[in-house]
Amino acid sequence: MATTKRQVKALSASEEAFVREVGRVLLELPRAVDADMIEGAGLPLSEYSPLMFLSETPGRAMRMSELAAVCSLSLSGMTRVVIRLEKHGWVERVKCAEDGRGWNAVLTDAGLERLEQAWPTHLASVRRHLVDHFRDHDLAALTAALRRVASGQGDRA
Image (cartoon, rainbow, N blue to C red; front, side, top):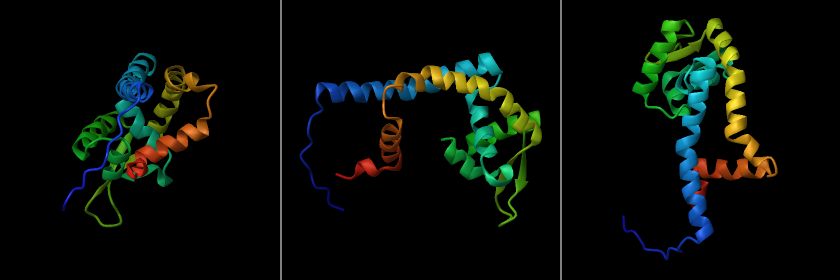
């Protein structure tokens, strides 16, 4: 496939600063929230996130590959996390009834209880490290812009 070169417009100083700060946020925000979660709830963000996503699904179950995707992990990485959660009794792995080939992660009652215990720490952390910095901004517009970026719609010129 032939690639056509298009004219690329240089970033302005404010655009460059914005891009660099977004990069810093993408690195530092998860670290800060993770540190708060470990200190305040004894639960790392890598374990909190799957519990949260499972709690929001019908039957509190997701296919392992889907859970990995929403948590931005590889399937093998998610498998390691789910094994740790299983050892605590917070998640069970169950064969998929639909096709029998895959596995579902299922949130247990104990897992839901653990999530509910950790939730206030997570809420306080994301408020302090993120939400409170945008009090005077249009969150709906920011959310819509971030959704476009995440979905790849910003790729279209």
